Every structure is written in C-alpha cells, then in structure tokens.
Image (cartoon, rainbow, N blue to C red):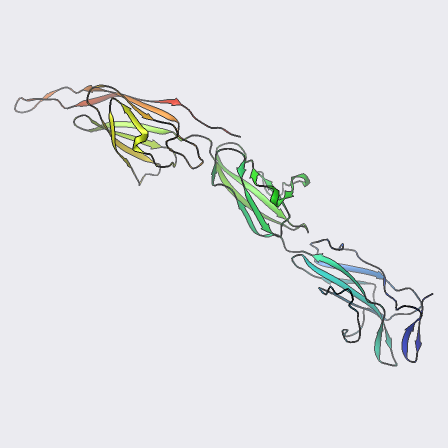
Length: 345
C-alpha cells in the first residue's frame, strides 16, 4: 500500500512519488487534429493515503517528456479540481498537458510535488485551408477538362457542378488525385464549386468557371457591287472570336480574290475582300474547314457562297459612244458542304 507521511517537516512517500491516474481528454484524441477551441482534461487522484492540496497544471507546446514541476517553475497555488479547461487555437499546432499533485509543507513553506505526468500531442487546428487555387481552361469543347487544384493545409477536396454543401462522404477525394473534371453538357458558361478540407475537418470554398462550346464557328457571306467594271466587294463575318483568316483560305471559281482586310473595330470578326471576274456566269467562293479556330478549339465548317453575274446593259454617253459598264450580280446563295461540328458530353 502506498501512502504519504511527514518526517522532519518534509513530505515523504512509502514507495515512488505518486502521479495522477486515469488522465484523459474528453474533447480531444492524442495526435489527431481537431478544430475544437476548448480542450477539457480529466483525471483521478493518485492512489494512497496522502491528502493532496491540489494539482499544478499547464497546457503548452513544451514536448519535453522529462519535464517535471518544481518550486522553480511554478507560481501561485495549485488548482483544487479534477478537471481543467483550456482555450486554444492554431494551424495544426501540437500542445502538451502537464500535471503533478502537490501538498504544502507548513514547516518549509513550500510545495512538495508528486510525479509529473506529461501527455500529448493534442493537435489543435482551427485554421481552414488557405491560398486556394482552382484553375480550369477559360473555354472548352469536350469533357473531361483539365483542372488544377491546391490549397495550403488541405488534404481532401470535393468538386461539384451543383453548388457548395452538396458533398457527400463518397465524393471527397485526396487533393492530389483530381486533375480532370466533367462539366455539365450544353453550350455556355459552367460554374464549378470546390470545397477544400483539412484533417481537422475545417473547410474553405472557392469556385471557377469555364465556357463550354462544342459548336464550330460559322461564316456569313455577302457580296455587293464594289465599283463599275468587273469588281465586287465580298464580306465574311463570324459569329464569335476566331483566329486570323488568311487570304489563301478563300478560293473562288471563275474569279480572283485579293485585298483581304479585317475590320478592327468590329465586335465580331469581319473581313472584306475584292472579287474580280472577267466574264459572266456562276462564281463560287470557297472557305475550307479548320481555317480559323474559336476560343474553345473548334475549327470552322467548310462553306460555299455562290452568286451569278451577267453583263450589264450597255449605255451610250453624250457623244453617242456605247459603253460597257461591267457585270451585275443577280443572285447569291450560301451553302454548307460539311458541318464538322463536334459534340462531346
């Protein structure tokens, strides 16, 4: 049996100095990061007959397993309770709990200490993931798309096309394992919702957007009389932003193409060019496929525009000379040869 008694004014023990029993935290688990800001420690009194005045305790980041309370590192009086609460915060910081029973010696006017018990680490993490990164292409034309995800302190991530708060247990994945994602099908802007989570369960949200476009760019042709003679003015307009059109991309049957120019002030790309012909009849303008590319990587479809010219009616000037004024256009038709449209879902 272990008990304590006083000899010559000092506290002595039959056997080893005594330590608290059944020391445990009711809020935290050893070496497991948790987001709770308050840690509660409970213990039972040491065995034996010694009546202790209380306990010296501390909760700090001192990880010295040989730490012991003594008169040099204690101030004030011990607590007279078998439970203590500490408030704390951190970014996965490790804390350690230290406790030793103490009894005041009225002859020496100092506390005598039992065995110090050191327990930890208790990992406190109240900081959510930060420096969130979620990058996707600005435009895309097919699934899956590339996605870049990272966040300081994050271990898991949930990606959703629906919204925040839609993550289920099975939808969480390790951050490093996701590098592609399927957006919802259909034309237009798509929003992607990302929630990062650390080991303690703290979460942080962010989002990114991409524009899904699986339709090939299409050109609109028009032709007008440019001036007297055998010249016409051709125009090609695209419905969306595309790469530069080259003059060699346009060919013509029964005519010559020249002076291709882009109207820089136009909201959508508009090109003008001269069409020269030397005889009447059918003129066919050809735009080959994949000559221009839109932001999503779709190449244009192959198209034709045809119109018919006839010799204009001669006129006579004031001196009686018969003039041939050139050709006039009597019809124009746009035709799509191949609809090279990509639809990927």
